[in-house]
Structures are given as structure tokens and as C-alpha cells.
Image (cartoon, rainbow, N blue to C red; front, side, top):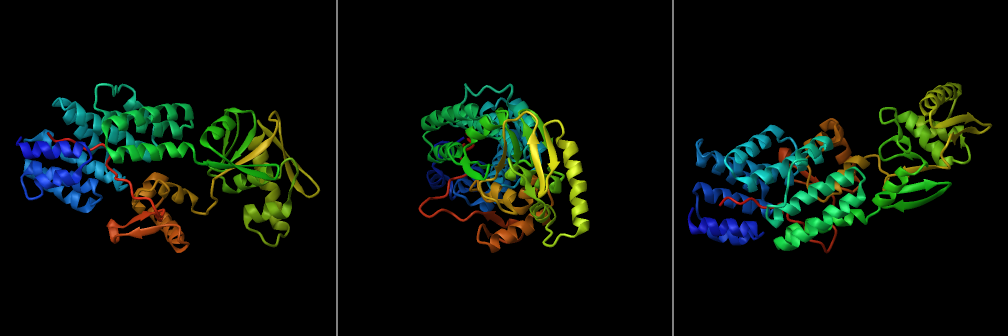
Length: 406
């Protein structure tokens, strides 16, 4: 490989896409096309980057398996950076196996990192952990080690293992400083801020206060009866009563939890659970039926009783009842939560991540856009959604662990 290609690859590895483009911007051979594509991706020009990488893939030819696998890997990274989760997992896996078979350990490790990152984004944490189980990042460069620790921290955060997350992010911070790539350091700092940002609100006895992730973890380990409005379940320690598919029952449980240690009036229960402004006998009958169903489900951990005004909840063993709510209540809060990571998402990617239909997501995005909470750019299939940028902050480069093709 000639000196200009080598120099461009090193510039990309150091997080200098403009330096790489200076060396290969006027060349159309396969290695130069690939490097130009990665450089454009680092600059946020994803459409142009994909075009260049596809041209590079065709230019390398069917016999140059390693070079083609590297191009596929770069395309996959762009897809993840632009939150295109429709990319088949088998494509990434195939590229990783090819790279491993030909001894390209660095790029094979990066392929594994991208596979894990995709699995984490779509909530398949068990598969992500299995992929990381036998992986040792020690022999790899600092940028690769930082990427590894970032996904380890991402899994730990989603598992509410905050000590493990802080430890992984500490190692990622050290590795990112050694790597000297500003975008990578920015990504690690952004991840660290998550641990110091309120993750939920605790509602108890008519009072409310924000909770950090560490405090949520402590709450779940305690003996308190928690009506969890983030995951739509009721828990006492390790005993869980999932109600995600029973929205009426969960809303009743939440109203009872908010009213504890007192009782919840029937009118409030009817309004919150059924949207009934004016209750008649049929509404009251339905309330009794649904309360009976909720009583049966909660029997191992709590008792529900009728009162003169309505109903009350009494934990069997727990010292108190609390409600854990999202930091910001919104009808489309789940969509807003994904967009809060600062990346640009397509409606199809959000549908995959949320496990719902694209039409449902599109309606939520339209409502959020009308309220000024999100904004879009691009047209048709290239349309992406983001939360409005915060004044005074630059956007983060989205490819912190650039591929090396030399």
C-alpha cells in the first residue's frame, strides 16, 4: 500500500478526517474510496460516505475478501451512527468471521464491538453479554479498549449496575485520553454524565424528588414496595408483578401507590384508568372487576381494600409504598427517551428499538414535533429525527473508533 494511503489511514485512526481527505480526496482507486468514505462519515456526511464505501466494495473485487469485509464494517458503523438498525446482524457477523479468519484481529474486534452496540440498542442484552464474554481487550490499541469499555458500561447501565458502569467508564476515560481522539473523549464524557443526571422521580406520601441511577438501584434492592412507572410493573425486592400488557391495572396500581398511606377516591381511579369524566353504574362495576383482577395479581406482596371513598393498598411486608416515575411524563415518553441520546434516529429504527409498528412511532414523532420537542431533517427514507440541540454545544462526532485500512 502506498505512502499516501498509509498516511490517510493513520490520520483517520487519530481522529483527523480532514487530514485524511487532503491525502486521498482526488483519488478513485479502491483503498482511497474506502478511506474517503470513512472520513466523510466522521464528518457526519453519511449519505456521501455510504456511496463511497459501496463504490470501494465493488472496486476491490470478489477476491479481496478482507478489504470488502472492512468496507462492510465501515458501512455498518455508519448505519449505527445514523441509527439505521435495519442492518441485518448476519452481515456484521459475516464480516467479523472473515476478518478473524484472515488474522485481522483489530478490525475483527471492532466488528464485535459494533455487533454488541447494535444488540444493546435493540435491547438484546443477553446476546450482547455473550458476545463479550470471551473477549479480552488488553492487547488492542487505546481506542479499541475505550470502545469495549463503553459497551460494557452501556450494558451495566441498562442492568442498573452502576458500580460496574462507573468502573467501565473510568477505564474508558483512561483509554480515550491515551488514544488522543477528541470525539472519543466526548463520547465517554457524555456517558459519564448519564450517571450524574436524574433518571427518575420518586413519589411517596404526596412528596416528590429526583433520583440518580445509583439511587434507583438502591431502591430496587430495598424492601420497599415500588410501583415502577418506568417499566410498568410492581416490585418488592426480587418479586415482580409485570403489568406492561395490562395498562388499566397498572394505572390503578399507580393511583393507589400515589395515594398511600391513604386511599384513592373512586372518581380519581375512574378518571385515570378509564378516562371517565362522569361515572355511572357501569363504570363503577368495571372498577370493581378490575380491582378484583389487580388484587389477585398483587396478592403475594400487597392487599387491596375497599374504603368509603374508594380503595387503598397495604403492603404485606414492605414498610412503605412508593411510585417510581419517569423524569418527564409524556404520552410519547418512550420515543423521547431514545431521542434523548443526542443521535439522529429514523422512524424505522425507533420502531425496531421499541418493538412496535413504524406507524405508531410516526404518530408519536408528529405529536412531539408539533409540541416543539423534536425536529427532523431529510426527506422520505433519509428522514431523521433528533431532539433540538442545546445552544452553545457542538454536535459529537459519531465515529469515535475509526477503522484502519492499512
